[in-house]
Image 1 (cartoon, rainbow, N blue to C red):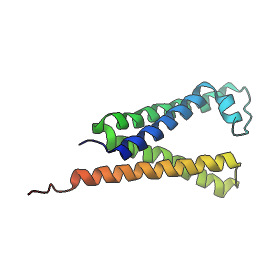
Image 2 (image 1 turned 135 degrees about the horizontal axis):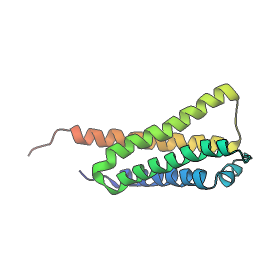
Image 3 (image 1 turned 120 degrees about the horizontal axis):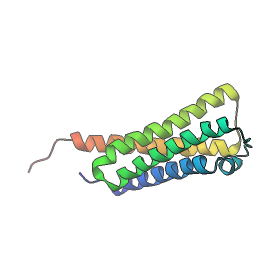
Length: 138
């Protein structure tokens, strides 16, 4: 089964976004977080705690992009995209409740994560429904 243009576009954009953000966190955390108005110190432990999940996000982004390229990976990549982006959005929601409102740039990230997560979930569900729909004869 081939992926639709919508599915490929959703996974391509969401995956590329995760890949780019993850790589930026892993390779240039000071610059990345400065764009949010967050100043990082030079603590090696802090850098390790930021770079490791950054590279993890980049790897997950690459897997999400793979679903845009290989139709056999579309459903898996869409599920992974939904999980990655909705988990970030939910984590921010917990922080909003426990810590208060963050800067506008963090609120924008929350909105983007929620939208990408929702779109990936939609791709996952649509792709699953097409796989189980009975074939029409005639």
